[in-house]
Length: 272
Length: 311
Image (cartoon, rainbow over all chains, first blue to last red):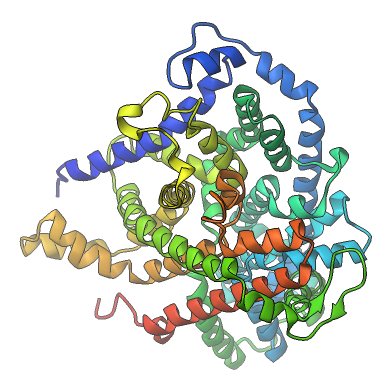
């Protein structure tokens, strides 16, 4: 059956393309303007002169430090998630008894807890633990709030491993430890990569926990840097927007090379 | 498979496994301990603490002191609080009403087989990659009344001060929310639309149903479960909208866009009244849970009606 082109859908998709493309165009083109050019010509026209000065200025304003902090937070969050979630998912899929069902339900309940709702007690807990204004104070809650989605995605992936494979390994007298490393981990690679992407994006783009749990220059992450930049030097739009572009750059590079894993990781919230 | 359908599916699965699979080595509960302890410490304990702190007076420095219902009576008589609840509901409902049709159209389109679809959808989903902070900062620069786009397109935007009135500011927040969240929901719908059996469409076109009728009589009903998941996510997300309000409007003009999540932040971290902040947080948690449960109940989702029955 030959499909006729659907003009209505095509038109709709063009509208969305414009809606997404327009701000991205303004964002990108503004970063190459001088401040005076932005104030006089506005954001729409193509600038008469192009400059890279905004990017240079961002780095002399401490963007490098923010970048390293964010990288440290992201790597640590991913490491924690990879350390605790696969064993948990393995237990949920394979262990027996009521207790493990209860554990799974606790994590499912966690899906409905918005981070916004716990910022006050989180501030209390982190202050009591002596981790206020410490990157570890951002890493721990961020990782904890990644767990429900990551658990859901990974148990989904592990359920696809057939019972025959487990039985075959049991025949060989394999311990759960060996089953985990030789069967479960290799066969849930797709789920694991989604989990890594999801956790990394959450950590890289996280704003709420850094906002309430840190205050110094030395613990500032990128998103907080953007917010501070806007409240303090809001008039320097080209400088601000070039910092936005720099903050997106790593994700874009990953997006170009691993779009499939990225999209699957993003879909983790809603389904498998 | 959606988050919610997992619950009952896992129950069925567990029961089935108890009957079979004899003599297979299984992991003990110890495997689940690290993650569970970690999650209890940094998610469940704070959630319970919200309730406790809402009955205390705490300035963030000294130890919290119990003060009974003082925070609650204070909030009950606070006109900003009452208004913030209305605003939260308005923003939440507006978000869901605007985002749902756009996401469905976009998702169904992306599930199809058009030419250039791969390239276009790569661009379509870009907002997903950006932090809420980056999105808000960019839109704020674009919509700036003096140096942004409105100053250059006065035929369209009038005096250009889009965020100067309550209705304007709500419209901007809804629009930016749509820009930010539509791609994620569209991805959900894309997944849902791909899972619709092709047979249904073939049968319909044999019966002479056109594209539009196929959309309304096959696609939409088949997307029912996806729609419920997506709407729940939209409602819970809408209730807790914070970053965009903080960066785009600061709750203004005046307190015109001070929704509950932003008011909670102000009370706790700007006025250092952490007790009142906790009370607002508790309201948000309870309302979010009730809405999720209500949507699941009203839609009959908990009864797990299959959309592929009889196929």
